[in-house]
Image 1: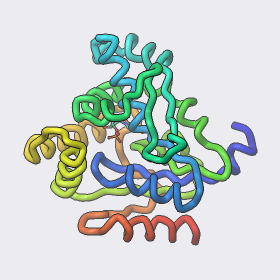
Image 2: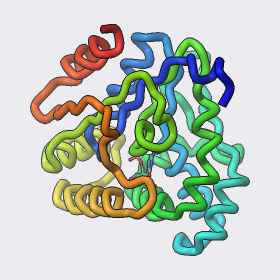
Image 3: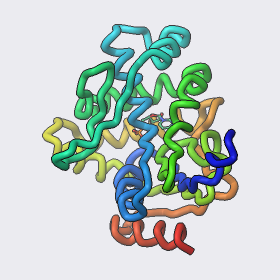
Image 4: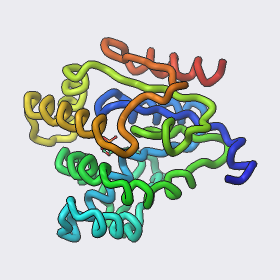
Length: 227
Ligand code: C5P
């Protein structure tokens, strides 16, 4: 690792799905004027590309090759609006947010060679003036030398409710009970996998956001980075 790369400040925000990481990371990156790495979107994009190619998600070699060759771009539209995720030239922003893509991402994320294939891609987001990295293993595997680490969580019930609201707002058809079951199953798979399991880094600050507003969590995180 280049010395200059190590000096670029990194804030890692890890935690289970629906903990609010995505929203909090985007807001904090914006407030600090730092870059943002949504690593979950990378896994989702590979899951999407593998689905498009009709791959068997349990075929480690095939999905690893898919991760190596899939072109993923994050594009910020000049006329505002959220970041677009372009996968092999296709705008997959909405598709990758579907629960089927989340489940595909979680399944392929357990494959060690696939995680290794995505390692450098994620590290390349570390650029001045700083990076907010959102994921499951940002503080433990990808940026173990990050200056600031947070592990953000919330109860499974609250996370299911938040996800339900988000997906409904996007006009997707889901039920709360199904989401709750899916979140629990995904948590278990993410926490129990042998490679880069979901767990707080030893030096991470734990924040339980159950019952906390987004503004309060953002303020807490900014206070931590600035102190
Ligand atoms: O964060 P998000 O829900 O978009 O991530 C989708 C899936 O990708 C997660 O359930 C997890 O299995 C996987 N993932 C991962 N490591 C990361 C980010 C996401 O394994 N750093």
